[in-house]
Amino acid sequence: MAEPGTRAAEETADHGWRLRHLPVLLVAVAVLAAVAAVAGGVWRGADGALGAAAGVAVTAASYTLTTVVLAWADSKDPQLVLPFGLGLYVAKITALGGVMVLVASTGWPGLIPFALGIAGGVVVWTGVHVWWLTTVHARRMPR
Image (cartoon, rainbow, N blue to C red; front, side, top):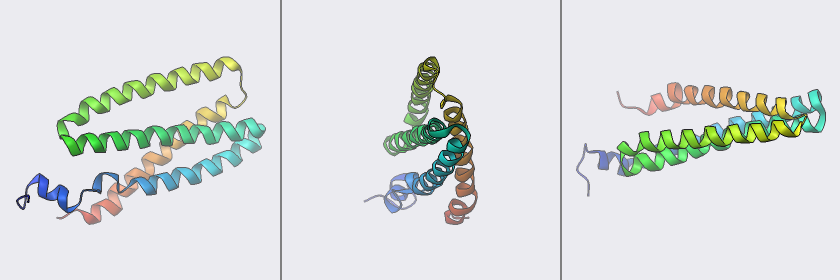
């Protein structure tokens, strides 16, 4: 049994805090993906709809992977967060750059909606995350 006031006691008391925000963020980007698909479809047809929704999905998958990996690393040892975070960042940026170059080489008309979907996903995910931290999470923090 962990002694009160220690990190182990805090984790035992609320071990799910690292991922508590994830469902709210995923719902927000799911709504964005639907809106982006409609907007992309109106703008560039089926390719635009697919591109915009896929761009949002890529962002959501990337941020979800980061959230889960960093939550795991922090649960094992907080000193693992930096190396895992940086390694994952380098891997994701490299993979995203490769995907963008590959897609651009095909001449696919959904490329611009895809890129805009990625940008929109970043803005919405970050905005909802900030909202979560400043409202919902802030109410749970002891003063």
